[in-house]
Length: 61
Length: 319
Image (cartoon, rainbow over all chains, first blue to last red; front, side, top):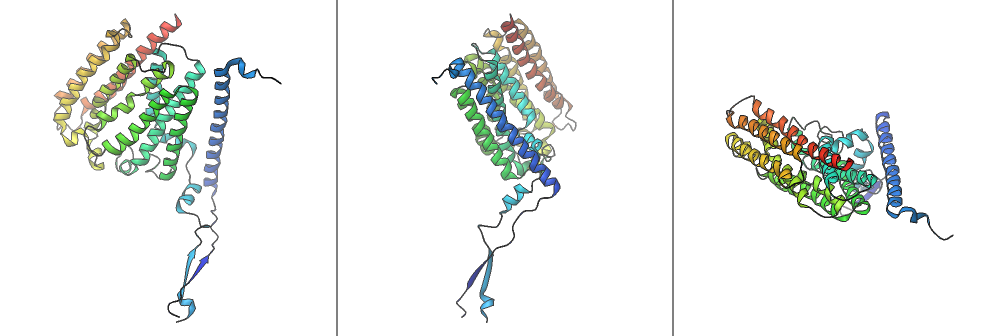
């Protein structure tokens, strides 16, 4: 009996509960990331148009 | 002994949150704190000098591409700053000047700063490469590498020449701005590099003179601590004379006009005058007023020279 060791995995409730301040900070960070991604889309769009010029709009239908 | 005595419990690794996950999810860091990681004041100097390089460069660049280039250079420099703050968090916590930075203040977790720095560095280099040109992107990548690895990791804690060699990182922005337009490194951009490179030692050593206690406490081998105040004062004076000479080179080589000639000569002489004040200062001076004056003037000097070059370049473009 002494040589038998039984390992039991205990699944605990590990969810992280954020308080209001933490939620506010997370929301602000998320908005900042969204704005930056949006800005990147706009930048890439305009630079593509600038680099290719009007040719970018010419394509066979 | 019962079976129950031999039961070992452990949390399921797959389901439990790591400390870092908890740290990030529960962070109180606001976007502004991440902006502080980018060292905005250093970034503003980078933007300014890169802009001067970009405007002075011969050739045309669309204003929007120019804006993208300057923004990418600024973010790249900021990313290097964030990685530097991550690496130096231990000594930043000791020094009064840096103890309230986001990492030592406990606002941003070190792993978040590291991730943020790497991501911003990668994005800035890629954006500059894809949207502007790859030579400027390579230089930006090298600048970030130089600042983080060569300066922060290798030199800063090991040699009193740290800011002399490390100064190269701060001198690259005008070159990158120039290359963004021309896709080549011109002699003019190398002179702009040289001005900032030679300016760095007297600027930082004057700061180190009146902040030496801070640096000593943090164990950073700045020149006044390793070689003493007297030797630092002598070296500041030597570099100031070299700076006054290098500062005039744009006019000598013909890309600085007569206004620049006057400004660089007058401000160069003033720089040497303030450095002479530091030279005459007693090494045991408690207040170190001449060093403080030189530190402030060094910022004005660099701004004046680059602003004059910018003004002349804009004047030529507008005419």
